[in-house]
Amino acid sequence: MTINTDQQAQDEIKRAKNKRVKISIMVGVLLIGLIISISFNFEDFQKYATENVSITLVISLLIYTMLGLTFIPTSPITLFLAFLIGPLHAALMATLGNTLSALLEYKVGETLGDIFNFEERKNNLPLNLGKLPIHSPYVLLFGRLIPGGVRGLSYVAGAYQVPMKLYLPTTISMALLSAFFIAFGGEKLISLI
Image (cartoon, rainbow, N blue to C red; front, side, top):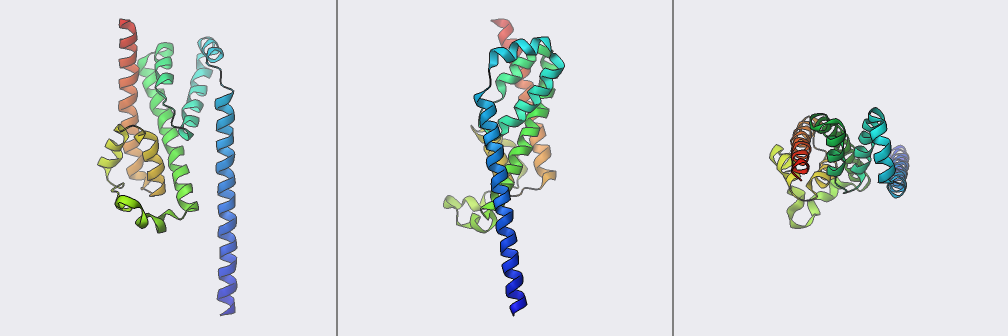
């Protein structure tokens, strides 16, 4: 009986340490994202981007990924890239960037779900949200069409621990579709003006 109690106490201490480490990492990442977003100057970026296209693409991927921590849309970056490198390449960069961003959001949601014991608490959510059919490909596809759905759905999918073999294809397909609409449509719209 003493061995089980000692083992349970050690397991509890280990879980508490694990939660503290996860919380510390989350706070650190949020602080870095906040510092970057505060110090960002678009005019300087635009001048630099036209002079250094290859570095601009790497920076764009980082910005897409970092915006995964916010609810700021990435459409302006896609439009900017469409004028800089063309709509096809911009759409592909946007797809890659938004997919990386979605994976980051998924991991944040998964981590928050672990920290707050979401699996145990989801059945007590109001409006039967614990029974949300998040494991459905239709919810994962069409949930991204509602405002806030792109970011919010990734966080929720992470908390619900949707299998990656379901999450990733639906994420890539919607990111590709929206990137092509924004890049090609935005370029055509601006060319008419």
